[in-house]
Length: 286
Image 1 (cartoon, rainbow, N blue to C red):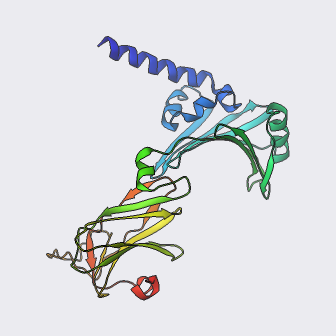
Image 2: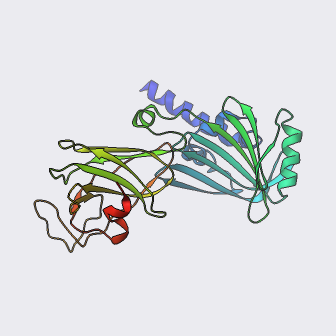
Image 3: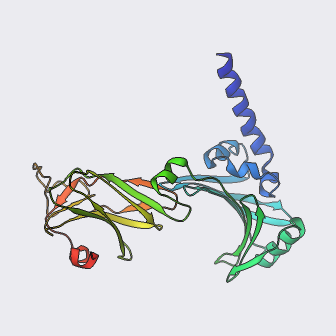
C-alpha cells in the first residue's frame, strides 16, 4: 500500500513538474520532456487556462495539439501553437508555430543554439544535427507562419525490429484463415498508387509477413496459383451467407494503414472468387 501511494505521489509530482516547466520544454532546454507520451503532457497541462489542447491517437502513434489563447513567449518569439508527436518509428517531435515567420524563427535558433548549423533540406526548410539523435528543424507553413521542431529519434521497439520494421518502413503480417491447397502469393497492394509488394507462402503455412512497406494504405490479398481463389483481409458483410470456405464475391476489401516502424496485423479472413479488375493477378504481376 505504501509503495502504491509513493508511486502515485511521484507520478503526480512528475506531472506537476512538466506543467511548471513548460517554458523550459518549449525553449528546448528540457529535451527529456519530449520523450514523455503526449497523453501524460496533456494531463500535466490541464490546469493551464491559457491552453486549449486536444489529444489524438492513431495507429502509428499519438499527437497533442495545443493552441494558446494568449501568445507564449519562447526564444524571443510569440508562439501561438505547439504540437507533441510520438510516432511508431521512434520519432519524438515537439513543434512550435510562430506568426513571426520563418526568418524570425531562423534568427532565434541561431541566437539561442550557437552550436546549431542550419542546412537547407528543401524549399523553406532547414535542419541542424545536434548529435545523440537530436536535431532542430525550421520550416515555413502554408500560411507563412514559421515552425521550429525539436526532434529526438528514440530506439525502435525490439519487437518491431525483429519483425522487419525500420525507421522508414513498416510491416504487414497475419494469419491466413481462408487457406486452400495450392501455392500462394500474398501481396500488400497500395490502395492509393497501385504498386505492390508480395511474398511467397508455401503450402502448409498459414502465416504471411510483408516487410519494407512505405507509409500508405494497403490491401492484403492472396493470389492462388490457379487464379480463381483469393484469401483477403475484408469487412464482414450482411449480404454474404456463411459457408465452410467463407467464399463471397460481393464483399468489400479493407484497406489498412501502415506507418514506418509499425507492425500491422491483418488476418486473411475471407476468400474471394472474384476481385476488382484493378486488383487482378495479371496487373499485380508475378
